[in-house]
Image 1 (spheres, rainbow, N blue to C red):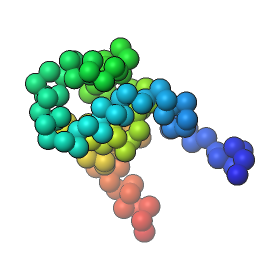
Image 2: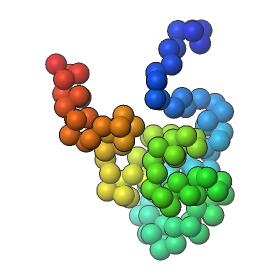
Image 3: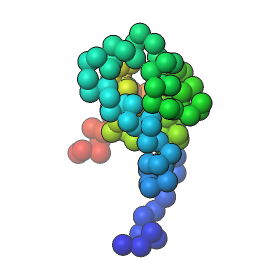
Length: 116
């Protein structure tokens, strides 16, 4: 399949090979949140936990600022970032609303309409 068959969607961040490489440490850290002990260690020292995984300064700042959209731009995979979002009490619909610039209620309504 050629690249021309993949239309760019305005406002989306393409997660491809270079982005996966860029976000490797970030995604590895987020994957660690599958373990309760990792979640607790993060809560005890967030900055130190980021340093253990070798996050870039931009990734670390986005983690500490709770900036999911910046994390996507820094190579975060939504599948792994969902683990971090869960620590913040966010669900996938909350993140979808952030990505689209909508309220959570408007995003949920959009999903309902799309399913009709």
